[in-house]
Length: 102
Image (tube, rainbow, N blue to C red; front, side):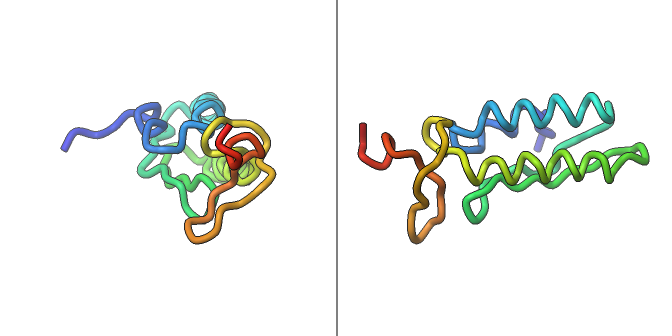
């Protein structure tokens, strides 16, 4: 199977998180041009990032990833607005408009 580019991983996330994921990747690639996503997914209502880099700045990359992972837990998975609720069962942050079906 062909390796996915960092930005191709974004399509596997809920739409509401796409802009945050892109910003995170941009910031990580700026910090370390060898940055490569191994896996990017939703888990427990937040984005989860598994990555690698060839240079020694893993702690800087990890701090960037953790900051964006935390942000996604407060952003609606459907539209990207601030989340006001969490779904039950499969835990996902969702805004007032999306939970009402507007």
